[in-house]
Image (spheres, helix red, strand yellow):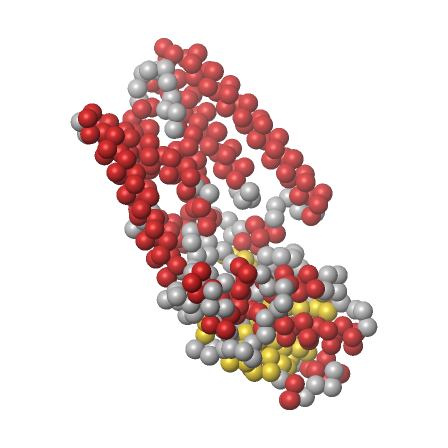
Length: 415
C-alpha cells in the first residue's frame, strides 16, 4: 500500500460527502432523506478509514519511531510551483502514450457525464462517482507531489484497473447513445477488443524504449550476452535480477565490495564497516544480507536512513523525487562539521556512479579509488545503460591493509 493511499481515500470520501450535501442543499431538496442515507454510509467509511489510518501510524511509530516512511520524509518538499510543474510534466508524459490515451479520453468523457448526472433532480448519485473521485484525487496528488523519476508511470499503476473500468463504462454509455440497438453489442465488443489489442504494441514500445529488463528471448542467451567473462556475478543473484541490465551493471560491484568489506572487517576486528552512497538499491540489499549487523550505511539521498534528513546541516536542503538534493562532494568538503554536528564520521567505503562523484573529487579528499567499472549495457531495448561504477576507501585504510596500485581493479564491460 502506497503511503498516501489512505489520505487519498479520505479525500475521496470527503468529496463524495460534500457533493451529496451540495446536491441536497442546492439541486434536489425534495429528496433530502436519500442523501442523508448516503452521507451516513460515507461517515461510516470515513470512521473505518480513520481508525485504519491511526492504527497504521501507531504501528509505524512503534516499529520504526516515525509516523511516515523514510522515503516520504526524504522526498517531501511541500507544494510549490516547481513541484507542480514537475508533476504536470510527469503526468503528461505518463498519460500521453498512444496505448494509454484512449483510456484517458474515455475516463474524461465519463467524468463529464458524472458531472451532468449530478445536476439531475432524481434522488440519485452516479454509481461511478466515488471511482471518478478516486482518479481525480490520485492524479491531483501525483501532480502536487512533483511526480516520480522511475520508468513505467508507477504512480499511475494502481489507478489502471479503476480507469479501465471507467473507460468500459464510458464506452457503453457512448455506444448506447450513438449506435443503433441492433449494432451495439458488436460495436462494443469490437471496440473493447481493439483497446485490449492496443496494449500489445504498447508493451513492445515500453520494452524497446523504457524497460530496464529484457525480453525472455534475450534472457535465454544467458548473462554472457551482456557481461564479459571477466565480470563476476553474485551466486545468489536471482533469475529476474539477471534479466535486469541495471542489476547486472551492479553485479560486479557487489562482488568487489564484498571482497573489500571482508578485508576491512578482518582489520577492524569486528567493528562495523561504514559505507556512503547515493545508490541504496540492489547493492545495499545484498551487502546488508551478507553482513547483517556489521555495516552502517549513510544514504546521501536520505531514503533509507535518517542521518542526513535529521542532520542540522542538511535537514533544510531542497528535496525532490529522488530525495535530498545532496551530493557526496558536499559531504567530503564539510567532513568536520558533519562529524561534529551530525555524528557522521568519514566512511570507510564510498561507492557510487561516476556522475555522482568523480575519482578526482574522492582523491582530493582522502580516498583512494580501488575499483573502476566502465562500458555500456544494452538488450533488445533501444536503451544503452552507462555501466560506470566506482569503489573508494579511505587513504588510511588503503595503507593499513597494505594495498598498492596492483590492487586497483579496472573492469571494462564493453559497448
